[in-house]
Length: 405
Image (cartoon, rainbow, N blue to C red; front, side, top):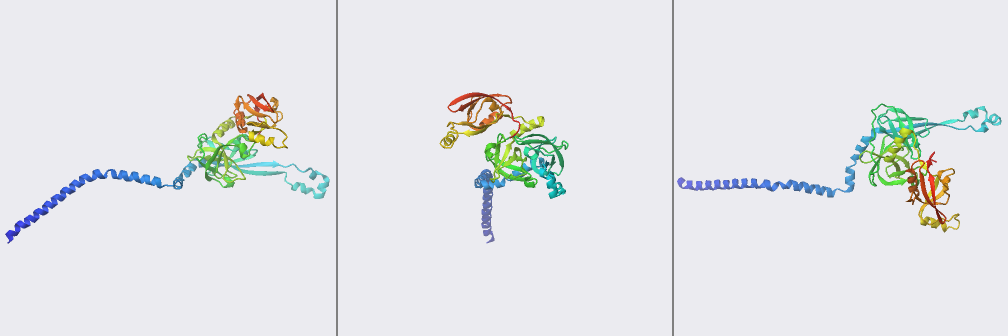
């Protein structure tokens, strides 16, 4: 019986061995195939995952996720932003009645002595260092007529500032401090490539709160000073909705890379979220002249003007109380001629409509202003005007504008 069972046991063992051998072969063949099938899998999964993430990321999530660029931008320029404190003493004229013996007897001799004859005014603004030698750029209205200028750095150091030059027409000034040659310098960008919708970061000391940063976007470009309501300036502003308040004046407006693209200079008191900055390209050109000459010469004609359109002229002409009839054309209407000005000497009259300058059509007051600003002092401009039903050609030699008013 045992002998007969042996072959059966051997047969079962043979079956087991055969099964194991087949299993090994299948396992080896599977291991050889799997790598070739699995290699593309990680690439496909990674590609699909990035696409899904990109598609599922909303604009709001993208903006929130990239806010760290503000920190990087401020860190790049922050140490070069300064606070500017000014002091100015104004003297009041003593009322002559107080010097009259009758009033002195009535009020007493000590009354006039109690009335202050002078007062000290303090101002606050911002600025930024543009050169390691200690040149600081700011607004003219920050340091104009100041008796003392103090510049305070972010690290706490304070220096007395000397005003190197002021240009009221562009509201720019350059101040010099003596602090060695190890000063931080703000990187100056270009305002030429700025576009509406770009990030705008305002840095300064609004309302006395030092080292304040606000974020917004560029709302529009080339907003003329006349449109802003500053008729005595010659500027095309960068408009932004970054919060700008008193004390921000003279501080930098940055782009997303931390480069200065403008100088914060004006706000509209009747509006919220609207601020204006001087383009840095304009500021760099003016600063170079202020550093060299202490002033900037601006050519002028001497006319107060208004952009004229056919619709505007028609409204005037249909008004029975209008003192003058205006040609219903496009041009620049002369509202007033400054006495003893180049325009007055050339024969420009109130009511004239300027049509061309040096053969170029003029359709707006801003265009004429920019044309004159870009001309040379003493340059003769050929101006075509319409006076009533006739046109005349006049030659006007530009002269230097003496003050902003």
